[in-house]
Structure formats: C-alpha cells, structure tokens
Image (cartoon, rainbow, N blue to C red):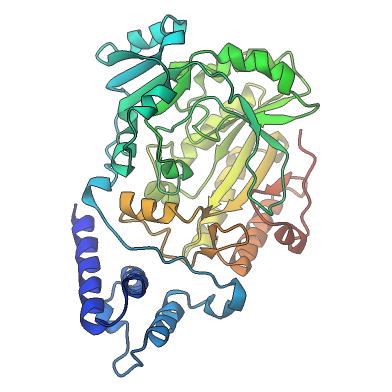
Length: 449
C-alpha cells in the first residue's frame, strides 16, 4: 500500500513538473518526458526538478536528449541500435497484484459440455466441494459473451478454472523469436495459465486469459502425437503453464510418463519452478524423461517469483528425481541484471553443483531477460515495486525489450565460465538469442539427448 502511494505521488509530481515547465509541448511529447522523468526519478530516488539542470535548453529535442542520456547512460551512444520504448506512464491501484499466498482453490469451475461427465470433472468436485460448478458450451462461446477483460481480471485468474476438451491445439514448434538460433524444441500444449506470480511472466500479456485452463482429455494428446511425432524429437510442457505446480490435482505426469515409455526415441521434458515431484517418484519411466527447473538467485526469487519454491527446494527436488533415475535440466532464464548479479549467479552455480553432479544434467539453457513491449506497462501496473524495469532495456533485433548486446554478451560469457569450472562437457545453449551472439561466444547448439 505504501509503495503504491509513494509511486503515485512520484508520478503526480512528475506530471506537475512537466505541465509547469513545458506547457507548450504537445500531448505525445509530454508523455515521453513524463515517462523518462518518472523512470529516472524512481531508479535514483530523486525529484524531477533535480533531474533537469537549471539553465538548460528548453526545446523538446534538447530536453529529451538530456533525459535519454540520464536514463540510458551506457547505451545512449549506440546510434541506430539505440531504440528506447517510451509508452504512456500510468498506474492504477485496481490493477496492482495482491501478493497473498494461498492454496489454489478456485471459486468458479466452468466445464465444457463434451467433458462434463469426464473422470477429471468428477475428480475436481471431490477436491473443491465449495466451488460453484457451471456447464458451458465451450470456452470459445464463453469468451464471446465475456469480451471485457483486463489486468484486474488477470489478477483474479486463480479464482476461475476452465475444464475443456482440447480439439486441435495439441502441439507446436517452440515459438522461437524472429532471428534467433532455433533449438528445435516442440511444445506439448497441456493447459494454459499459471498459479505462480512472476513479475516478468509473458502470460500477463494475454488479454483473453480468463483463468486457469486444463484439458480433461489428455488421451487426445496421445492419439494426436502419433501423427505429429518426428524422429528423435525433444518436446515438453511448461510453455503456457508450470508443468508440475498443479500435478497434485491433474496427475498429468503419470499418464505422460507411461505413454512415452512407448516412444523411447522421444525426450519429454517437465519444466517447473516448484518442488512437486511426488507423482514422478512413483512413476516407472524409460529414461527418456527430463525434469528441469528454472533457476535464479534466491534474492531474485524473493523479489520476482512469488509463490514458487525456494532455490534450495528446487535443487532438493532435482536430487530426488536423479535418485529415481531421471536426468535433470536447468534453465538460467530469465537472467536478471542488477548490481550484484555476478556475485549472486556465482553463488547459484555453487549451490547447483554442491547438490547435482554434472553427469546427471541433460542440458542447461541460458536466456537473458526479454519481453514484448506491451508487457512493460502491465509489469509496472501489477508490480509497482519492481526493480527489473529500472535497468537499460531497449528494443532489440526482434523488437523485444532486451539488455544491450554488449551487456548480454558479458553476462552470457561470465555465466558460461562459471558453469565450465565444474565441467567442460555440459550441454549449454542460449534461449531466444540471435545467431551473432552464438558466434561471438563461439557457442554451437549441442546435440541434446
């Protein structure tokens, strides 16, 4: 509450300063100056009046140039590659995320008519006896009749669960960003929506996300896999929902593991930020299942990955899986830049290899923080206290907001050096990164199991 009050007062002060000092500028020009002044004021905790020097030129281009140089001191001189994104600055109390941890217990459960008598639908009634159950024609029909949806509704997504019969969107190739080196991954679209609250999550950008969506017909995926399958492919869940966060409820992992025992040339990956591996430890697998964790220093988890398992809990769960015969994977993604990033990611790698032996690791991916431009306003509205937007993020080669090339290169190089101390045979690759970065790092896509 106090943070919101402080930041709204800051924004109010910035707007007042611009109105008083630049009344002759147009609306768009004022909005850009407000954005720059607010971001500098927030990052450095100074008043707008202390940012612009007295006696400085007052024409728009001079003022903007001065502010850009202060906001992006390390990348301002990059020339054509310097592409800042300066959308309108707004803060709305009703759109701020309420970070109160509670067990997932939806108030309303909507079940599509074709699966209303399914085992999964009946199973939910035993778990959530107090929930209100409604039958709907389809989620598509429901969306047509509920067109107004925004950030405020996204904040309440844990209150609504949709049970659907998936009919077509079973699998797809990984939506690799334009111009990036492709890793050849395939996505198993098993559900949509996450019960965790990560400040950087790209799912926040989906304007039609009505709640958590789970398919009742997992067998439909298996039937369709026979048509989709490619030789020696790597496929997994975790793109549009955490693979294991709700496995205590869905139990998807058990039939998936059983199914892929028949497809030993396919590697299936569960990707998670949880420690919910209980069902995996009960299952009989064929050695072609990889359980992987997204990793960040504990300080980043505390500030940005709300409701997820702690770093140590993730590593403990990984060791349990290794002891059950699984290979494990790790995703240093997104790597977040901050003043002590090198020290903290160094501690992270130490913790990792204190617990896990290199021979048990199937792969490690590394990807720096990046996101679609429209997500910027969503993040600052939902997580007004965030620090991740304070750094220098510019429109990159794929029109996503990213750290400048040189900074990304330095971070990748250092993290790869940290990992290589423990083994020079780790299979390391970059996620969603341009080909020129791979070449500069002298990195090639490894042959993955």
